[in-house]
Length: 113
Length: 114
Image 1 (cartoon, rainbow over the protein chains, first blue to last red):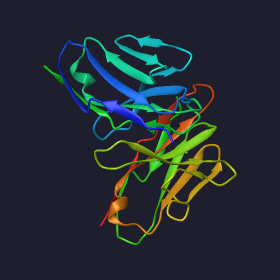
Image 2 (image 1 turned 90 degrees about the vertical axis):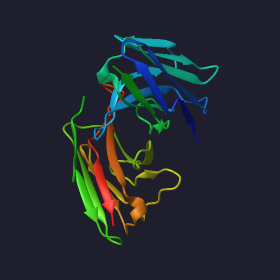
Image 3 (image 1 turned 135 degrees about the vertical axis):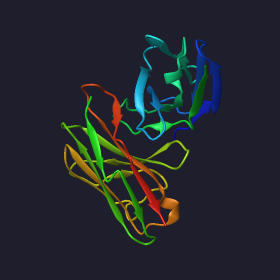
Image 4 (image 1 turned 180 degrees about the vertical axis):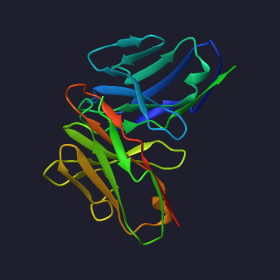
């Protein structure tokens, strides 16, 4: 089955700086890669996703890049703000959003004031 | 996006008992899923809840332990049977439709087994 590795497990950045979280996946048939943000005690919230026919997608301060050859995708957050502090999970699936998701272990992002 | 609710939001149960968790979506959805999130950990897919047929379970999860029902396109239940302390987790449902082609999650049910 699919295996998703996520790094780093903890990331501390100064407010205003950029943060990058990286994931690799094992199954070349995977075609859908969402990113979820989970605040303490809350449900995971989808923040951005990318499909295998696209190399990059951006939404305001958040961007995701995908390298299918390397089976690697990354989340980029620019101009970080205190409210960006949370746990971020990457995930992968073979059937778009209609398939069960395999999650990475998560990255605890800490924004230092 | 679909609005998803779960009941109960949390529960404390005794070893050996069973708990049924409900997941309600405010609109008809094609797919519903159940995940487990152990304390401080990531999410793991338990099963896909299929409307009108048996659920599809992931490796390591079995129907006898986690029976699932999906009687219609807006509702599903997950039962955690014969519970042990190792079943203490947050259980989350999610839904998918072709309109958005994304999965949205319910608020989760926090289960503690003593």
